[in-house]
Amino acid sequence: MDSQDWNGASVSAIVSAAGRLQNGQIILMHDGIQNTRDAVPQIMANLTSRNLCPGMISPTTGRAVAPDGTTPPTGGPTTPPPGGGSCTATITPGTVFGDRYNTSVTVTGANTWAVVVAITAPQKIVTTWNGNPTWDSSGNVMTMRSNGSGNTFGFTTMFNGNSSARPQIRSCTAG
Image: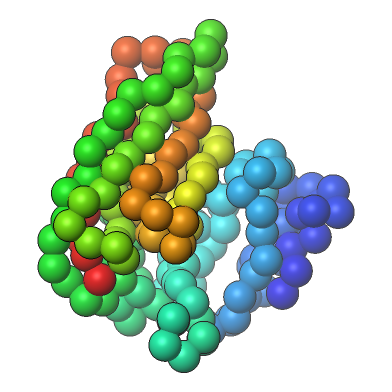
């Protein structure tokens, strides 16, 4: 399903498109579009209320699958992909601008991984790179999965009035 975010769709239109998703369907959205980023918390709440969760494309089958076949807990981190194992994720603070800051995370111990990162409200992650992100229903816990672009990913966080808190790594799972 195409969210039409690339074509100037409003937040409500993107949320409405995602609201029609059924188990196993895929919606095309782009993380570089503000309306898409603004729609994510509403989309997550809707998916959770219908016992659906954001999934991933299986590298084996090419089909959409839930990461481990379960729904993420409300308010908790999204579920990492199956496979288990451990890895280490190290945060490197980046450039701080007047209203935002960049963060890089380097993963060691695995080439395929899922890293769960938490930020403090009212901060919001607005841009990501070199990974496939999903968020919990609060929008404050991001699970970043490897996308074949290496073992370093990054994100930009808006302060939104809280310039003292920094992201925290909750877990790193290999698989």
